Image (tube, helix red, strand yellow):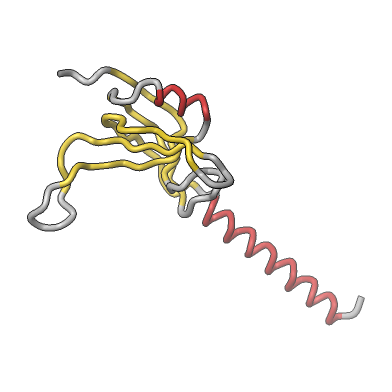
Length: 128
């Protein structure tokens, strides 16, 4: 191999490693994780090619995005697996505590949201 080919090969390998690192950071690196609690509004299965489970949780309290307006706190999320989604579908309207992971960007097969629920911590009836 000539020196030019060696340098070209090394540069190509470095570029591939950088591209892999960028893709990992954008799509697979867990940016944050935590717990959200509230009343489950809905869970649906939707998508054109990749059918994913999406849901919305209504959190207690009110939040104002603009001065002088009131709005419910809503947490929109994707669901990691079918078993969790089916359990939530069967208990819509109940109070849930959900553990989630936050990614930088979404993937079509992971769901529409950057927030992905991976477990249910508690589920209970809402006191009247």
